[in-house]
Structures are given as structure tokens and as C-alpha cells.
Length: 165
Image (spheres, rainbow, N blue to C red):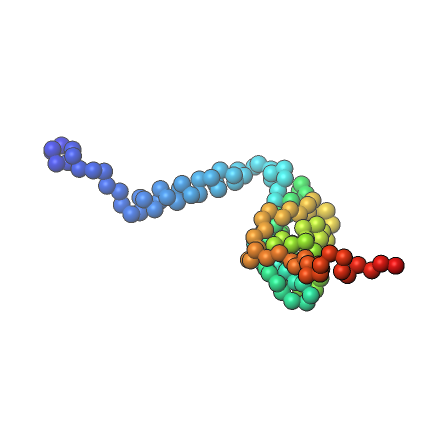
């Protein structure tokens, strides 16, 4: 070994660096995969992609809320079966959001969670079969704008608008 070789830094090719970066990123994802011969996880889940739910007041769109949901599946339900019908589920949610909005009366920054999850659960029963989905959870809600609804009778001074016999 020559003196020049002993002092030269270790060099990696671009291919080596990309392979190492890929292994770091994929490592945690691959760690959760089931091995051949293992059963499915006890509580399988299916993550719905984020969708934009309109907030409608007095027939006008006043805001949008980006909502991410997770379907907790019943034991024995196959996650792969949910991928095929996800577009139908998403379409039904958006159509319902325009027809009977999931707007809360107290805020325009969040959807009415119980109404939305109840609707999604009923659609899952219709699309995937009754009992395939154990529950629906709203994981995240991000409003497009930080708007609050106007307070009722905010302009009326105290005592006005109240009828006395």
C-alpha cells in the first residue's frame, strides 16, 4: 500500500449512496410487513387518502377542510379488497358533503365528526359488506382558512330581538 492510498478518503459511488438511502427509508416500512406463513395483524386498518370536504353555510361554500380517515377493519377482513372500491366510497362521501353538508354549527374549521364517520360507516357496510369495518376514525382535519361562523344576533344590542309578552 502506498502512502497516497492510505490517506485517500473512502469513496462511494452514487449507486451505493442511493441504495443506502433507499434501505434507510424502506427499513421501517419493511419491518412491519408480515412474513410468509404469519397471520394478518389483529387490528388491520385501511387509510383513506386525504379528501377535501366543503363547509357549506346558507347554500354557499365558505371553507374547505382536508380530512384524513382510517377504517379499522374487523378481524378476518382483507385489506386488499378495500383498494378496489375506495373510489366509490370517496365519491359517495363527496356527493353527500354537497347534498347534506357535514358542517358544524359552531365552527367552519372542522367537519361534524360524528355525522361524517356515521355516514362513512353506512357506506362501508353497503360497499364492503356489513361487519367488515369495525369503526371509522378521523385522523386529521386541516382547514383551508381559519374562519369562524358569525355569531347570531351579534349586531343587535342587548335586549333587542327578544320578544316580551
